[in-house]
Length: 613
Image 1 (spheres, rainbow, N blue to C red):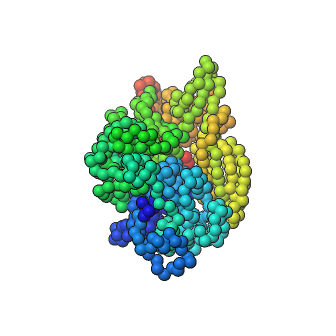
Image 2 (cartoon, helix red, strand yellow):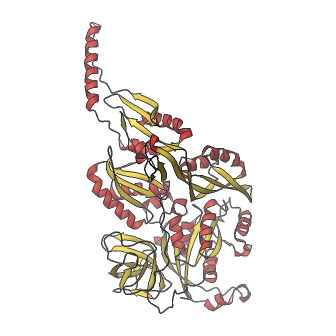
Image 3 (spheres, rainbow, N blue to C red):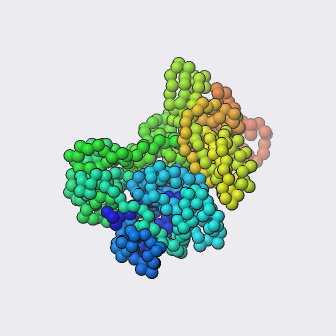
């Protein structure tokens, strides 16, 4: 155990976590040079395509500490004692986007220390503060690392001063690295060994086996594969174990480590991070934060993780109801690899049977729907994303509403409550005026401001979660030329002045287009929606009316003319009455068609309406 170091890399999005992880794997010889590629720990096609990390990924490295050229005065006695010995370094690479901060929190519970990576071209950003507070709450050892020092845009001295102020550390504590060139990576590895403490057993090194589940995946051949941190004892193939929360027993089919591919080992011991194959092929038994222990163990389970609460809800329907069972199986499979995703069955009069799904943010929603299309070949209809509201009705009841389609009628509502968020924003001071105007437009309340080095300002803001989803991220990025960063946390429920906006196509409400908007902008939003839908909806064989309705009245209306055949094209001349006769016949035919016509709304229309322009 003295030769094990468990650590994670945390940072704001795009500060170079995955690139630095690549260099650590290369320098330690974990992956042969001929097999190296960029983002080697990002296994998903979407991760590599978008250049972001979505799932945390553990990996085990071996490192030989041996630097005889350094003199004794520069190093502590522990480092000297360990010189020339082999160390096992367990790294968990984490996502940087705010939507996947739950992945970060789970990774940090499985380690003793972390590398706080800060981009030398950008400095401290909003998500840097969020991930740092997570690490501090868990009492982890934090090693500040300055990345991208090879960039011509690097501002090393200014960013170092920000780090010193943030962590109250010395300049010598900050390690300068470049994930691109590998500069400083050797020094970083030595500091990981020197500063991060070895794991400590929960009871005793020889005590009964107990492990904390921090993630899991599913294999159609091997069943559920559990990723765990061994807190006590050891585990090997053939041992009878039990999920404590689910109270389900199983026999270990295989125990192994990540290098970075799964590699079977004889024994997983206390302090190590690895996986075990359970053979269980039903969903619902494995859960993040559960304790895996001996089958007969009666000691209390380990403290686990708080369950993530979805903040964004959207309904997903198959385009063809024949695919409903495939959609159910696909969602269950995704749930096995993403514990923060939730779903339950629902039905709609116009869209048929589908699922109401909960997500941690808009990017999370986008990733899940894209995976359903790519990995399972599904064609989907996704409703406009919404959040959770608490509504008090005139009959005294209080209901929780997840979907705009089930929002009570305007006349039945007495009061509505909605979730608010605490937002932290960091931006160059030149953009503060434009950002404040956007904040006013999104009903935000600006709190304290703080000045950072290099003419940067941080704002603490409270605002409705509903407004955060209404193009807020895009508006801030656009107004700040991409220099502003932000992170948010859900705070409390407050009273809201909102109404349901319905879009009616050919006298039928389309639930996928319904959404909850602020009363002050409902007319403007209704006009925008009608205009947008009228532009992208293909013309039908009959005249189609598109309307926006809220508070019991029509706010906006637009009529799309029908596709018509030129019935008089073959007439070369003659009396006008011949043409009128044909036009009248066509008009009667269109009227008869309208009574039994069904408006066809293609999948692309739903997608375009969901996207923000």
